[in-house]
Length: 283
Ligand code: NDP
Image (cartoon, rainbow, N blue to C red; front, top):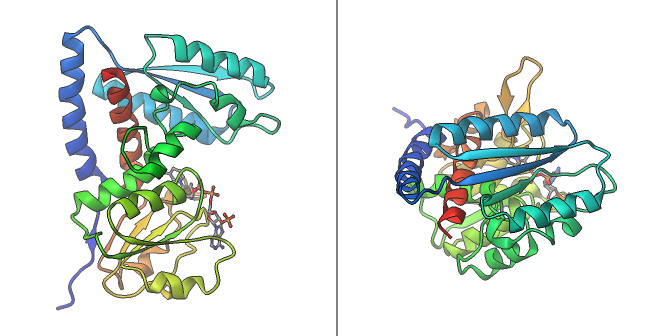
């Protein structure tokens, strides 16, 4: 009988992480500290609001505090810089998350330059990026990239010496994940919209990560037997359901292991944000 591919559910991984976080939250509570995240949202983007609500639900369950500073889409860079400075100086706030992309005319680089790196729990400042690049584990890693690595490790997918191919080179997923996988001694290829023979490159991978932002783009032509496929994509379907960057119905018949959408990488991203907020609170 043909062996079924391994479905790498995020929930099992998230459960273990939540238990660890709860223990740390209890220890901090004994010292009178409640870890607190401040979400800074500009405009009323429905995706941002949905993400904010999922953070609020996840943090409430874990006993962490969340405050939202919502600005109109017409907010100025000066207002946001002042906010970053105030939050950096506020001892009751341990982590800060600025939702991006920002409305046109606002530079996230200029604004994030005023956020203290020790509160940058989603690894968005230049200082955090430098620490991901150095691989010394001092700063915060973008939560989604960390989620990809954590799910691979949780399911004990061999990484050392293996060939990892990442489709996507964004600062939030592709690039930091390339550094994390290099840190695990994988041989990493990062692909993008100008890569030639993308299906061929993908088929050579042991671990294939799709962070491309295109619904179901990675089809059976892009995969080969024995691979592990991590699908980072999140796309809302007309019926309200979710799908990823991988056409998983066809791909899972071929590969050895895969992360589902929903229920894969996205399930643990918010938990990692909580973990980072607790780490920031511990100082
Ligand atoms: P971006 O749009 O910032 O980056 C997409 C990347 O894919 C770019 O590097 C782009 O290349 C590349 N790309 C686009 N089209 C192609 C193509 N036809 N062939 C090859 N490469 C291509 O996306 P993000 O990294 O922000 O997000 C990626 C996906 O992950 C999205 O579906 C998003 O919804 C999801 N996401 C999920 C999260 C989670 O928690 N699970 C969190 C964040 C994002 P180029 O650089 O050349 O333009």
